[in-house]
Length: 338
Ligand SMILES: [Zn+2]
Ligand SMILES: [Zn+2]
Picture 1 (spheres, rainbow, N blue to C red):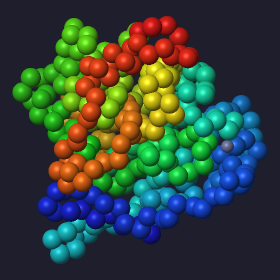
Picture 2: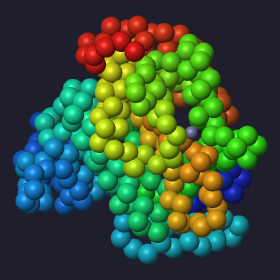
Picture 3: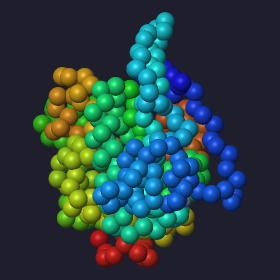
Picture 4: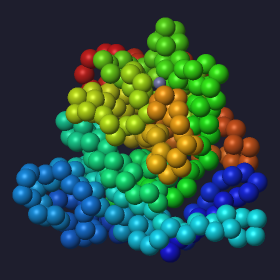
């Protein structure tokens, strides 16, 4: 059983008891491929035809618990004080979203309709995990490439984590958004979108429902965000039309990133609302003040000592230059120009 500890000097939580990565030798069968369902823990969700039996072939998206999870769903949540410290049992969920039954290494190998199903899978899992009162925050993320920390089979997948705590990075974003709202009575992300759309220099791509842009103070070279144009705090309330549009937007922008950086390593992170039921009265304006978004953070260089110690990152590519390159790169796939 893992355990979470909170550092009282920074407010940062750390998970202890991480399992070592599994040793896989080249040539081992891939547990994520269709037909190998018995090689994973029993599935928790799948998209497939009506009447399909769990853990059998004929699925399009399949979600299974991580066989070597950082957190486990079983067991009561225990919180206690330990001297001046806070500790919490490693109760949570750690799931793998297998994004296709075929052995593709990258999301960009998939057609938009398949990626839309992956997004629906994320939404279904978030909805389900939010019903569990033990969890305060739920994350969806994707590690592409070894530099981004991918160590599971190189069969394209994303991960879902439900945590019994609110990580500092998310809390800082939520606190900042709430502070802006208290002063201006407006969502900081809606304000940012309005300005960026007028200014235009950091806009990468536009659709009816979404905007891809490079953030003003991007931490990573070619980092981009995708935000819904209409205000919303909860990713999981998206419609099939939303996910269809978002899938095209994500694929088109990732395809342009691949033109600039061949086989890019990146972390994709979905920042969406935490579980509001957990602390009634605490996130009262969250629906108005927070705006969900996806951040794609390419990993071009290793994080250096100064950045580790100071939390202040250095980025060699100005976001305006990154946006221009992401706009003009000749995408091999992904359709029309933004
Ligand atoms: Zn595979
Ligand atoms: Zn907003």
